[in-house]
Length: 442
Image 1: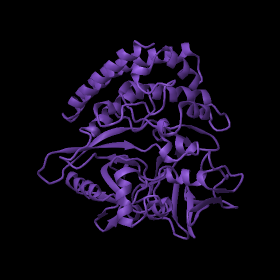
Image 2 (image 1 turned 90 degrees about the vertical axis):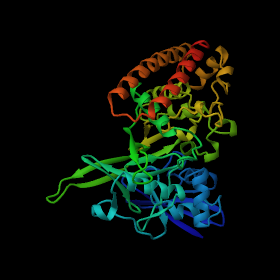
Image 3 (image 1 turned 30 degrees about the horizontal axis):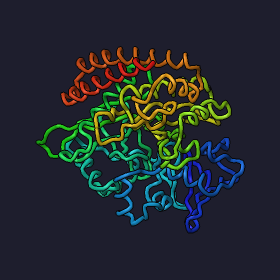
């Protein structure tokens, strides 16, 4: 039997056990995590022991997908379906507040000396070398240290640390908490999705201009060789981390706290393969009914309204990959709230990506199928009246028009890389077409 210890905020909260494919999770009886709280809405503390699909679904959703998962499987010689094997290798730094490690393994204390937790990246060239190593293998050895990260999703990414007042970028050592997610697309010359880094940057700035909750984003320059062209990685501050500075006579002591979170597949007890409704997956109604539950959500009305506008925003920007794992909740106590937005990309620019909606809109899978009847059905799914949904859609179209002008002005004032503007123009054109199309269907 394989046994993994599950920590939250550095406290042991339970054990994940695997006996030849039969998985179970059990909360420890006298947890040091005050007060005792469940790690997921799908894994309540009563009963204390959980078995089967609810367990494998929650923990499987912590893991990478696609090419990153394939590369990890090859390196660690883990079967692609062996989630416990993956977590044994890379579960020490998960999304949210959880760390999953082999039984008895010691975690690096969050108050350990700074240089025991982080290594600086010297300059743009070293950042390029680091990114190159990660593109070669997601668990790359770099300067004698192994990069291990459990972040769900298929895009090339890693986690780094940045601290207020310090321009440097740091690599977290095993068990240390990161503060930012770094996305860098594919190897130059082999891009599957041209300009996706600039695409996500521009869409994220549009979200902020629409007053959508989203953490700070920026583009970080790097070079793959010293005199080579300047490239950029997309950097977004993590919403599941909080930074505190404790003043010390010698130097400030930076500590990174973790915030518990789970995506909607985890919260609803569904596997990662259920992120699209077409694959017998999560539906809009299920997401909104979860947000409407006062036993689970702190302020249901606020959560429903924020989720609805974020879904409409994704429709308008042409994000056809805004599946159930791209919406999350964060927990600070027994109840939760909707997490800030992330993974905002105009996928309509990429013909190879499926252009159907990830969740049906009142039965419609495409904009062409969306009409008055489907909008009325969608209103029922998102728990509001049809007239109210149409008002929300009209208001969102106006906000998006204003946001396009706002962000264009901001980017021209800032030191924005020239490569952003051609992508921004394509996205802007796509958004204006979507607004026109959507208004015609109201």
